Length: 436
Image (cartoon, rainbow, N blue to C red):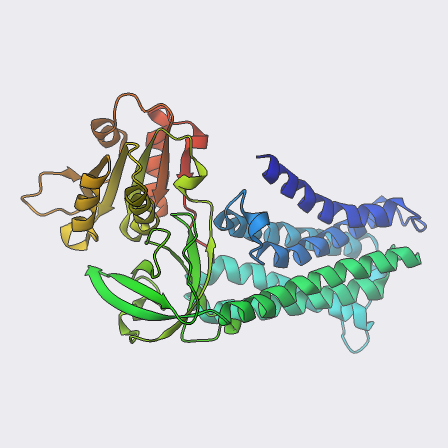
C-alpha cells in the first residue's frame, strides 16, 4: 500500500506540478481567474495525456502494486478526465476570451492554434472510439493500430500548440522545464512503440502443440526458440501474445498463463470469442509467437499469509486459477482450497480429469456449477450464490483469500456473496480482464 501511495503521489505530482510552477513562479500578468484557470486546465490535460503513454509502457515496478489490468482500467478513465479538462479549457476561452482562439479557418489561424484544434479532434476520437469499439464491432487489431497512431499524433500536436501559444512560458527556465517534460513523454512513446517491441522480438517462441479441450476452448503450448523461456513468474499472471507478426505492429492480445512456473513450455487456455480468438484452431504448428510478460497482480503468491483459498472461475477464467492450483501441487502446498468452476454443461467444462487428479494431490475440493446440465446431473446447478458457497466452504474460513476470474456478471455476483459470508474486501481478488 505504501508503494502504491508513492506511485499515486508521483503521478499527481507530474500532473499538477508543471502548471503550478508555471503559475506560481514568475507568473506573467494575470488575465483574470477564468483565463488562469483555463490555462491550468490545458497544461494539466496535456500532462495527463503525456502520462497515458507512461501508464501503458508496462513498467513492472510501477504496475506491481496495482496490477496492469487495473492500470489499463485507470488509463481509460484518466483519458476521459483529460478530455473533459481540454473541453472546459476551450469552452472558458470561447466564452470569456473569444479573441484568443482566433479564426477557426486553418488557412487564416496561427499554426499552433490549428495544431491545438486538430489535437482536440484526435483526443475526442481516441476516447470515443475506445468507449464504443465493441458496439461498433471494430476489430481489435485495426482499432489498436489507429488508436496508437492517433494518440501519438495528438500528443505531438498538443505539445506544438502549447509551445506556440507560449502562455506562462515567460522565462527561459520554464521553457527548458516544459521542453524536458515533453521530451520525457516522447521517450515514453518511443519506448512503447519501438524499444519494447524490439526487445520482445529478440525472444521468439513457436507453437509446440494446440488441441481442443472442450466446447470452444483450446489449449495452446508454446516452446522458446533460442532462449530459456519464461520460467519465473507468479502463478495467475498473464502475457501479451503476437502470433506470426512482428510485435512492432501492435497486433498483440492478452492471455492468462495456465501453466505453473518452472516449466520450459508455456500453456494458455484460449476460448473462441472474438475476431482473433475464433482463428486459434487455424494456427499451424511451428507458427512463431512473441510473448511479452509476465504481468499482473492476480496471484496467490501475493498473499503468503493466507490460510486457505476460494477459487471461482467461469469458462476461460479457469486459466489463471489452474496456474495457481498447479503451482500449489508442484510446491506441496497443503493449504485448503475450494474451486467453484462454472460452465454451461459438462461438454464445455475443460480440464475435468486434471482437476480431479489435482484434488487428490492437494487439499482441494472441486465444485462444478452447470447452467444447462444434463438431465442426470447431480451436482450444483445455476450460478454462484451465497447458498452454494455455504454448502461447500468450511464454517471457519478466517484468513482465507478468494480469487475470481470470469464474466463480469459472475464476478459481481460472487463478490457480493463472499462479502455476505464475511470475506473482507481486501481478501477478494478479481481479475479485470477488459484491457480494450
